[in-house]
Every structure is written in structure tokens, then in C-alpha cells.
Length: 234
Ligand SMILES: [Zn+2]
Image (tube, rainbow, N blue to C red; front, side, top):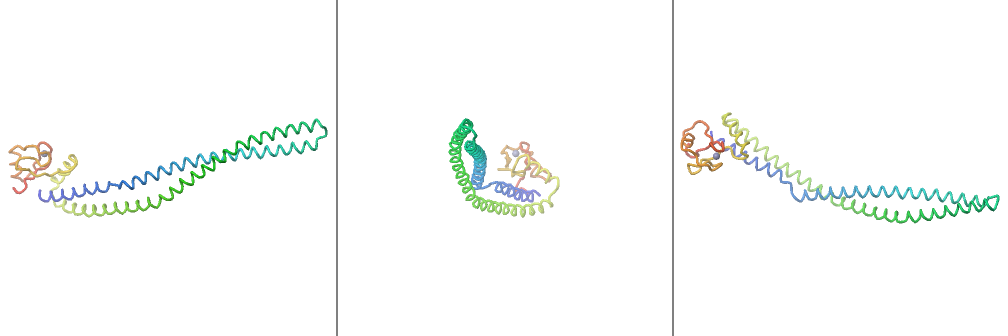
């Protein structure tokens, strides 16, 4: 019975190793994924800045256009004025609008330069992202295949394990599984040098060793609770 249990444990340990192997995502993939996320965030922020600036440029251009219209109106009105005084008033207005137009033009110029710079930064980030994507896709596809392979191997081992486990005594199997959960690893251990627990290395009392040898009941280490296997002694 313990021989079979040890085979079940062999499968369980293989499954533990596969679980560990499955979780080992390649560092290169993690780094590339992180780089992509970082690039995407930076791109998003730059796009926001660009959109805000675009709005400011558009608004300034609207103001400019309105002001140009008012200057034109003032200019035309001054030509149609019925008196020199009225003409002079319109000319003053025209001058004020012209000053405002000049101010707006001075405002909009650096804004447009900044906008152009931002557009270039957005394009550069987008290009980096576009360049990275196929690399990341290939890595993700490799990773998917790697995990699928591990899962297939695990599934095959799991089936062998479960088939074998059905031939074991239910109570023995439950005790074994309970210890394995509690101790994370071995549930069944050999008695080492005919005196020590192969799990926690504690020196076992003689009567425990004798009881384990005699069988047929399950004998557990009084210290760690693992099932003891007096291998070779029957
Ligand atoms: Zn022990």
C-alpha cells in the first residue's frame, strides 16, 4: 500500500514541479509587457496634452478671426463715416483691433510651435509602440504555447495519478493529502537510517518505528505528522 502511495506522491511531486514551471513567466516577456504599458501610458498623456493644446490654438485662431472681422468692419465704417469725428472714432477702433490682433498672433505662434513638437512626440511614441507590438505578440504566443505544453503534461500526469489513487485505501489517501497540504511537499517519508523521520529529521521513538514496521496501520511521525514508510522492511 505504501509503495503505491509513494508512486502517487511521485506524481504529486511532478505536478508540484509543473505548477512551479507554469508560473515561471519569462523575464523578457514581463519586461516587454511592462515597456508596452509604460509606452502606452506616456502616449496617452502626450495625446491629452496635444488635444488640450489643439483646443487652445483653435480658440486663439477663432478669436483672431473674429478680431480681424471687427477690424475690417471698423475700417469700412471709417470710410463710410459721415463726419471727420466719426471717421476718427472708427480709425481708433481699427487701431485697437489691430493691436489686439498683433497680440493674438504673437500668442498663437509659440502655441503652434509647441503643438508641432507635441505632435512629433506623439508620433514617435506611437512608432515605438507599433514597433514593439509584433515582438510582444510573438512572445505572448510563445508563452501561450509554453503554458499549454505544461498543462498537457500536467493533465497526463494527473490522470495517471488519479487512476493509481483509486486503488489506494481512502483513509490512507486522505491522511496523506491532509499532511501534504499542511506540510507543502511530502506527505509520505522514509524512515532514515532506521531511526529518523525523513521529513523533519526528528529521532523517532523505538515503539513508533516498531509499529511502522509491523503494520498494517498508518503510522505518522509524532513531530511533523508525515506518514512513515519503513522501506525495505515490508
Ligand atoms: Zn517528521
